[in-house]
Image (cartoon, rainbow, N blue to C red):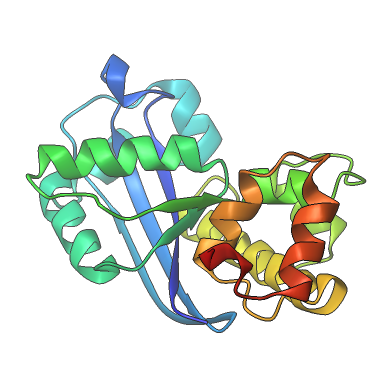
Length: 209
Protein backbone atom coordinates (compact mmCIF):
# COMPACT_ATOMS: atom_id res chain seq x y z
CA UNK A 1 0.00 0.00 0.00
CA UNK A 2 1.13 3.55 -0.65
CA UNK A 3 1.68 6.16 2.03
CA UNK A 4 -1.19 7.89 3.82
CA UNK A 5 -0.84 11.06 5.92
CA UNK A 6 -3.11 11.20 8.99
CA UNK A 7 -3.77 14.77 10.17
CA UNK A 8 -5.31 16.53 13.15
CA UNK A 9 -5.75 20.22 13.92
CA UNK A 10 -6.43 22.04 17.15
CA UNK A 11 -8.26 25.30 16.50
CA UNK A 12 -9.93 28.32 18.09
CA UNK A 13 -13.38 27.19 16.94
CA UNK A 14 -15.37 25.09 14.51
CA UNK A 15 -15.23 27.06 11.24
CA UNK A 16 -12.46 28.89 9.38
CA UNK A 17 -15.26 30.54 7.42
CA UNK A 18 -16.25 32.34 10.64
CA UNK A 19 -12.73 33.55 11.33
CA UNK A 20 -11.55 30.62 13.47
CA UNK A 21 -7.91 29.64 13.04
CA UNK A 22 -5.66 26.66 13.65
CA UNK A 23 -3.42 26.69 16.73
CA UNK A 24 -1.69 23.33 16.27
CA UNK A 25 -1.24 20.77 13.52
CA UNK A 26 0.11 17.23 13.60
CA UNK A 27 0.59 14.78 10.75
CA UNK A 28 1.46 11.12 11.13
CA UNK A 29 2.87 9.52 7.98
CA UNK A 30 1.96 5.86 7.56
CA UNK A 31 3.15 3.24 5.12
CA UNK A 32 1.84 -0.33 4.99
CA UNK A 33 -0.01 0.29 8.24
CA UNK A 34 3.10 1.48 10.10
CA UNK A 35 4.04 4.98 11.25
CA UNK A 36 7.18 6.07 9.40
CA UNK A 37 7.36 9.81 10.22
CA UNK A 38 5.69 12.59 12.22
CA UNK A 39 5.25 16.35 11.97
CA UNK A 40 3.87 18.54 14.77
CA UNK A 41 3.88 22.23 15.58
CA UNK A 42 1.97 24.90 17.42
CA UNK A 43 1.31 27.94 15.24
CA UNK A 44 0.72 31.63 15.81
CA UNK A 45 -2.21 32.82 13.71
CA UNK A 46 -2.45 36.14 15.54
CA UNK A 47 -5.83 35.38 17.09
CA UNK A 48 -7.08 35.03 20.64
CA UNK A 49 -7.78 31.54 22.02
CA UNK A 50 -11.05 31.48 24.00
CA UNK A 51 -10.83 30.24 27.58
CA UNK A 52 -13.04 27.21 26.89
CA UNK A 53 -10.69 26.09 24.10
CA UNK A 54 -7.71 26.39 26.43
CA UNK A 55 -9.61 24.32 28.98
CA UNK A 56 -10.29 21.65 26.35
CA UNK A 57 -6.85 21.50 24.70
CA UNK A 58 -4.43 22.95 27.23
CA UNK A 59 -3.13 25.32 24.53
CA UNK A 60 -2.76 28.84 25.90
CA UNK A 61 -2.37 32.22 24.26
CA UNK A 62 1.17 32.41 25.63
CA UNK A 63 2.04 29.10 23.95
CA UNK A 64 0.92 30.21 20.49
CA UNK A 65 2.46 33.65 20.87
CA UNK A 66 5.83 31.91 21.23
CA UNK A 67 5.13 29.61 18.26
CA UNK A 68 6.18 30.12 14.60
CA UNK A 69 3.82 32.02 12.29
CA UNK A 70 0.94 29.94 10.94
CA UNK A 71 1.99 30.54 7.32
CA UNK A 72 5.48 29.14 7.97
CA UNK A 73 4.15 26.11 9.81
CA UNK A 74 1.61 25.34 7.10
CA UNK A 75 4.18 25.68 4.31
CA UNK A 76 6.39 23.20 6.16
CA UNK A 77 3.41 20.88 6.71
CA UNK A 78 2.61 20.98 3.00
CA UNK A 79 6.21 20.07 2.15
CA UNK A 80 6.03 17.21 4.64
CA UNK A 81 2.85 15.80 3.05
CA UNK A 82 3.69 16.45 -0.58
CA UNK A 83 1.13 14.70 -2.78
CA UNK A 84 0.38 11.94 -0.27
CA UNK A 85 -3.38 11.42 0.23
CA UNK A 86 -4.76 12.24 3.66
CA UNK A 87 -6.99 10.80 6.36
CA UNK A 88 -8.58 12.44 9.39
CA UNK A 89 -11.18 11.56 11.97
CA UNK A 90 -14.10 13.80 10.99
CA UNK A 91 -12.21 14.76 7.85
CA UNK A 92 -14.62 17.49 6.78
CA UNK A 93 -13.43 19.54 9.77
CA UNK A 94 -9.69 19.01 9.26
CA UNK A 95 -9.89 19.39 5.49
CA UNK A 96 -11.55 22.81 5.89
CA UNK A 97 -8.65 23.99 8.04
CA UNK A 98 -6.05 22.37 5.79
CA UNK A 99 -7.43 24.18 2.76
CA UNK A 100 -8.06 27.50 4.55
CA UNK A 101 -4.70 27.72 6.31
CA UNK A 102 -2.76 26.70 3.20
CA UNK A 103 -4.69 29.27 1.15
CA UNK A 104 -3.59 31.96 3.60
CA UNK A 105 -0.01 30.75 3.13
CA UNK A 106 -0.41 30.81 -0.67
CA UNK A 107 0.02 27.05 -0.97
CA UNK A 108 -2.32 24.72 -2.92
CA UNK A 109 -4.11 21.88 -1.14
CA UNK A 110 -4.79 19.17 -3.76
CA UNK A 111 -4.70 16.16 -1.44
CA UNK A 112 -7.82 13.96 -1.29
CA UNK A 113 -9.19 13.12 2.17
CA UNK A 114 -10.70 9.94 3.59
CA UNK A 115 -12.58 9.98 6.89
CA UNK A 116 -12.25 7.40 9.69
CA UNK A 117 -15.61 8.52 11.12
CA UNK A 118 -17.41 7.56 7.90
CA UNK A 119 -15.38 4.39 7.52
CA UNK A 120 -16.02 3.28 11.10
CA UNK A 121 -19.76 3.91 10.68
CA UNK A 122 -19.78 1.69 7.61
CA UNK A 123 -17.73 -1.13 9.12
CA UNK A 124 -18.57 -1.03 12.84
CA UNK A 125 -22.26 -0.20 13.36
CA UNK A 126 -22.04 -2.13 16.64
CA UNK A 127 -19.66 0.43 18.17
CA UNK A 128 -21.39 2.40 20.95
CA UNK A 129 -19.91 5.64 19.62
CA UNK A 130 -17.84 6.71 16.64
CA UNK A 131 -15.91 9.40 18.49
CA UNK A 132 -12.17 8.84 18.20
CA UNK A 133 -11.43 8.18 21.86
CA UNK A 134 -14.39 5.84 22.20
CA UNK A 135 -13.35 3.82 19.14
CA UNK A 136 -9.78 3.60 20.46
CA UNK A 137 -11.14 2.21 23.73
CA UNK A 138 -13.62 -0.08 21.94
CA UNK A 139 -10.79 -1.73 19.98
CA UNK A 140 -8.25 -1.51 22.83
CA UNK A 141 -5.89 0.51 20.67
CA UNK A 142 -2.82 2.27 21.98
CA UNK A 143 -3.20 5.79 23.36
CA UNK A 144 -0.30 8.24 23.33
CA UNK A 145 -0.34 11.67 24.91
CA UNK A 146 -3.31 13.83 25.86
CA UNK A 147 -6.55 13.80 23.88
CA UNK A 148 -7.37 17.11 22.18
CA UNK A 149 -3.72 17.71 21.38
CA UNK A 150 -2.97 17.34 17.70
CA UNK A 151 -0.21 14.73 17.79
CA UNK A 152 -1.99 12.44 20.25
CA UNK A 153 -5.21 12.60 18.21
CA UNK A 154 -3.39 12.08 14.90
CA UNK A 155 -1.60 9.04 16.32
CA UNK A 156 -4.88 7.60 17.63
CA UNK A 157 -6.49 8.18 14.23
CA UNK A 158 -3.55 6.41 12.60
CA UNK A 159 -4.07 3.47 14.99
CA UNK A 160 -7.74 3.37 14.01
CA UNK A 161 -6.86 3.55 10.32
CA UNK A 162 -4.52 0.59 10.77
CA UNK A 163 -7.30 -1.39 12.44
CA UNK A 164 -9.72 -0.54 9.62
CA UNK A 165 -7.22 -1.67 6.98
CA UNK A 166 -6.43 -4.85 8.92
CA UNK A 167 -10.12 -5.74 9.21
CA UNK A 168 -10.69 -5.06 5.52
CA UNK A 169 -7.88 -7.46 4.64
CA UNK A 170 -8.69 -10.22 7.15
CA UNK A 171 -12.50 -10.03 7.50
CA UNK A 172 -13.48 -8.83 4.04
CA UNK A 173 -10.65 -10.22 1.86
CA UNK A 174 -9.73 -6.82 0.44
CA UNK A 175 -6.18 -7.30 -0.79
CA UNK A 176 -5.28 -3.60 -1.06
CA UNK A 177 -7.37 -1.31 1.20
CA UNK A 178 -5.50 1.74 -0.09
CA UNK A 179 -6.67 5.35 -0.03
CA UNK A 180 -8.70 5.06 -3.23
CA UNK A 181 -10.52 2.05 -1.81
CA UNK A 182 -11.20 3.88 1.47
CA UNK A 183 -12.70 6.84 -0.42
CA UNK A 184 -14.98 4.51 -2.38
CA UNK A 185 -15.96 2.66 0.77
CA UNK A 186 -16.91 5.78 2.72
CA UNK A 187 -19.14 6.92 -0.15
CA UNK A 188 -21.02 3.62 -0.06
CA UNK A 189 -24.31 3.46 1.82
CA UNK A 190 -24.61 1.04 4.69
CA UNK A 191 -27.26 -0.94 2.82
CA UNK A 192 -25.04 -1.29 -0.24
CA UNK A 193 -21.93 -2.22 1.74
CA UNK A 194 -22.19 -6.05 1.59
CA UNK A 195 -22.54 -6.01 -2.21
CA UNK A 196 -19.70 -3.48 -2.51
CA UNK A 197 -17.31 -5.59 -0.42
CA UNK A 198 -18.34 -8.80 -2.16
CA UNK A 199 -17.66 -7.25 -5.56
CA UNK A 200 -14.22 -6.11 -4.45
CA UNK A 201 -13.41 -9.46 -2.88
CA UNK A 202 -14.33 -11.24 -6.11
CA UNK A 203 -12.48 -8.74 -8.32
CA UNK A 204 -9.81 -6.54 -6.70
CA UNK A 205 -9.70 -4.40 -9.87
CA UNK A 206 -13.44 -3.63 -9.79
CA UNK A 207 -12.81 -0.07 -8.60
CA UNK A 208 -10.90 0.57 -11.82
CA UNK A 209 -13.88 -0.28 -14.03
